[in-house]
Length: 357
Ligand SMILES: C[S@@+](CC[C@H](N)C(=O)[O-])C[C@H]1O[C@@H](n2cnc3c(N)ncnc32)[C@H](O)[C@@H]1O
Image (cartoon, protein in one colour):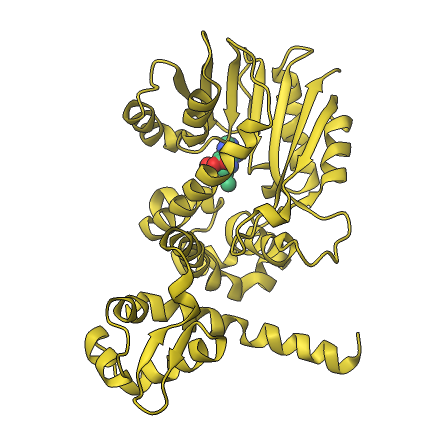
């Protein structure tokens, strides 16, 4: 890359946060909804409709017009949805759920990324929420805004990707399944719904504070006879008595030493022949692959906002780590980037492995 091109890339980064908030504000203010309801409004009409000064509305809309998201008729001053009109509502909702999570859980916290890396602690959570110990996953129990934003996104991600996960793993009839770090039970509910068989039992294992909501979810989905919850910390002990352990969206939260502690703990909890199915975002083997945005997002997100450590690895790294922890990897599959909606960041892979040692 030439020095000029390098500087050009820097400029893209510089305008990133401002672009992000300009777009999101246009949704939050209700400008996009107002234009959907009544195309052809002027800045004055939009200002009156959303309760903001027309000059500010006009300023925000310059970017959306530049992008072609919104059109502007110079003569009449009328705005209308342009490219935005063609985006299906469900897709837009998915993208906005992600953007809301980025705003609430990431944007302010990342101001402290440098300090978080230096101290190995979540300086942003401490400065903004007074959380001096633990991770985002403890903080969501106390802070409603963090919980609502993060949990809504997490459930959306899980609901979208689980059919692919369960379509690519085998859970024989009557299996006793442990969904490790299974949050409030959605993965267990999906396991039962997508892999139902006589005698299938699914247990969610997560931090104890998830129990109440998890059991409520099981009842609400009518699976409480087949699903249960065990509260605990993966670093203390992983419950025994299971044939298959699911580890979805979890290993990427930790550095290598902790991933090894988790995998060795899972290994210890299983009998020889027991299975583990891991789903995790992966970096491409060629890190310069421009189709994969995991590297753009997850290092900063995990280190600065959620865990003060962690970040995804390449599929080959996870395979090697599983083998080093006493498993034989029997199958791997990476989601084709072309099959993932264009706004979605994580590109996951599945690794299936059997305990051999
Ligand atoms: C990114 S979420 C993944 C949730 C779920 N597996 C899914 O795919 O939807 C990570 C989960 O790990 C849980 N968690 C974090 N640290 C944990 C620990 N030390 N022991 C057990 N669970 C933990 C969090 O409470 C959270 O539910």
